[in-house]
Length: 174
Image (cartoon, rainbow, N blue to C red; front, side):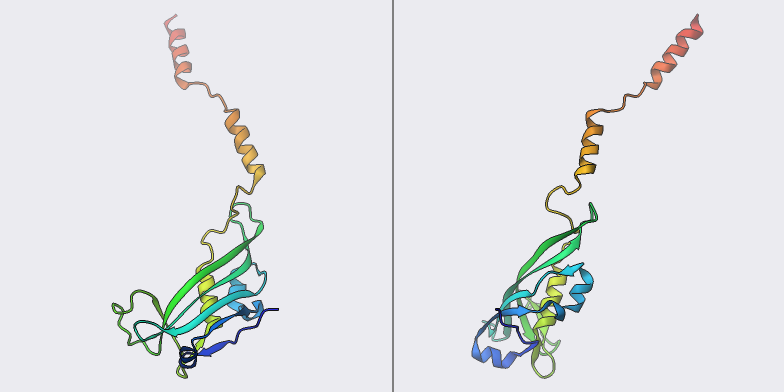
């Protein structure tokens, strides 16, 4: 049994402890993701750590994996796909961070109490990593493929319109 992770973590406390968290986020906690896909097929497996990096600013890095059900845009049937990603963000308290100085990673912001909502962060990242055009890995609609192959194998032979004109021309000469 995996450990259910908390909703929010104190950035300051986690930086001082330098601990790595591994656990799950229940699919019931992911309401926006549930609206974006047909079904969330299980909990999100998540590993992350919050630490102070070489810039002396808090950073969060980790990875997640979740299975979701999407509708294939080719055949309109449901299929299961895995969404996984490695992430790395700076954690800021306000919007005063200079863009050039911290352009290496994207910056996310904790709330006024210094808490970082890990569930919202991961849910946003999962939604951003969903495929733009969901489709099966392989050719999924065999009926359409068979029809296309049959059409290509037996092309329709059209009469050349110039042959008709040529025949008309020769008949007018006589």
